[in-house]
Length: 112
Length: 111
Image 1 (spheres, rainbow over the protein chains, first blue to last red):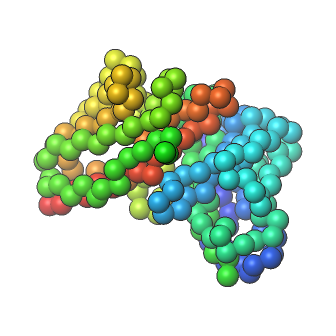
Image 2: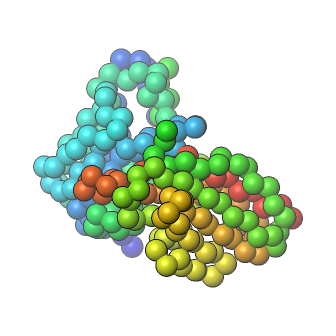
């Protein structure tokens, strides 16, 4: 069955370190998204991609970057982790613009 | 003002009860709406799309009121398994197809 996976599921890192969160989908979807979820804010879009070599900034993109070198993967990099980036991160993919988004299981990141 | 607003709850109801949630959105030009369900510490999953004419899926009914800019979700005959957070979602109107999420309404169904 097609799926979307994230790794690691849990990560503890120190302030200032570079961290990369992986997202891999086997749906063959063109659209991929990264969100963070914090209490009181709901899900907020960090970056998104509509295809290979395409990346776009979301509403909370500062301090994050993504790259899309193939259809299946959209890794999210925190250039220099900050305590404010402690959050739960969800990756999602969809076939079309207004189609259902399928979410990965999430990565719980703690920056100490 | 947030683009999508929801009452955070929690709504605490007994099994078998009928419960309704509302969600308001700020952009009157919004065209596409959804309800997602999120269980504790899990990923969100699509519950249902919301159509202009309203739509029903088993015990769940979604309605759209464009004039007042709100969407609603009605759950009849609540089950313990309905306990979750319900996220109201609107698609952005800037052609990016980004989803804009409300903060969610928490539902607790008690025996």
